[in-house]
Structures are given as C-alpha cells and as structure tokens.
Amino acid sequence: MEGKFELKKINEKCYSLDVRGLVCPYPQLLVTRSLNSLSQDDTLEVILDNPPSVRDIPPALKEKGYKVNVSRLDSSTWKITVKASSEKQQ
Image (cartoon, rainbow, N blue to C red; front, side, top):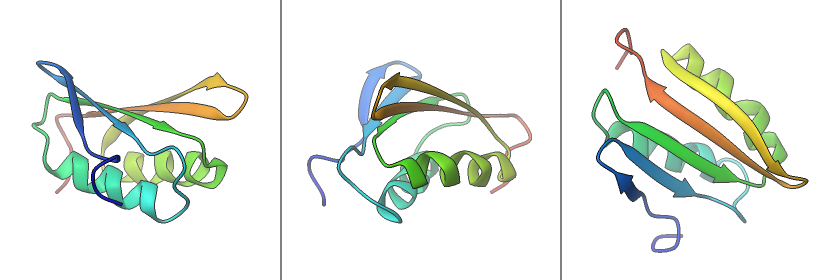
C-alpha cells in the first residue's frame, strides 16, 4: 500500500493524496494519517474513486473540526478538499 499512495506537496500550503483504487477503510486511514502530519493552515486534496469513502470521510472530518468540500471530477472520481480550521480538535 505504501509508495503509490503517498502525500505529495503541490505548493507551500497544499498537499495532494491520490487514493484511487483503494476501498474502505484504507482511504480514511491514509487521509487521517496525512492530516496528522500537516500544519494547521495546510490544505489536503484527496482524489478518490470509492463511493462509500466519499460518503463516510467528509462527515468524520467535519466532526473533528475540519472544513471539507467535496467536488465530482468525473463519473467515477471525486476530490475532497480538507482544511484545518482554527478550532480543530486533536
């Protein structure tokens, strides 16, 4: 699972994680691990193609205090943009 699914830096405050091809619970585990390694003002863009993950990850992140936006890229791919808010809980 390592290697292909690593966090990539896009620019100073933005990172990307492509978890296409993975099914639950792996996308959520990788997202959580990635967010734990980022700073408070960083943004994480997650590309995924697993509908249950698209359904389950955003509410779980919002519950932890993250700002989450989901957009559909095509018929089978989504992008979840996650940003830590100032009241993020650890």
